[in-house]
Figure (cartoon, rainbow, N blue to C red):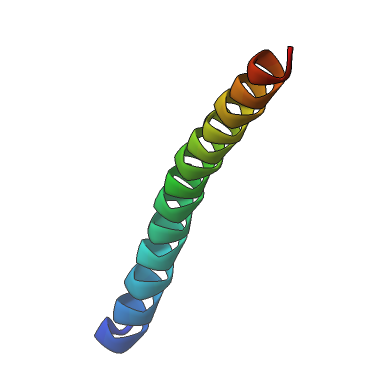
Amino acid sequence: MEAEAAKYIGAGLACFGMAGAAIGVANIFSNFLSGACAIRLLRRASSAT
């Protein structure tokens, strides 16, 4: 295998790793938003009664 091909393979594998990290961060952020919206809805429901 040539050195240039190894560089491209390494760059591609690094992109897969970064994509996995991005999915993890997006998952945490979406759970945060879900929790924030649920708290807001619960506050509205409790103040209506």
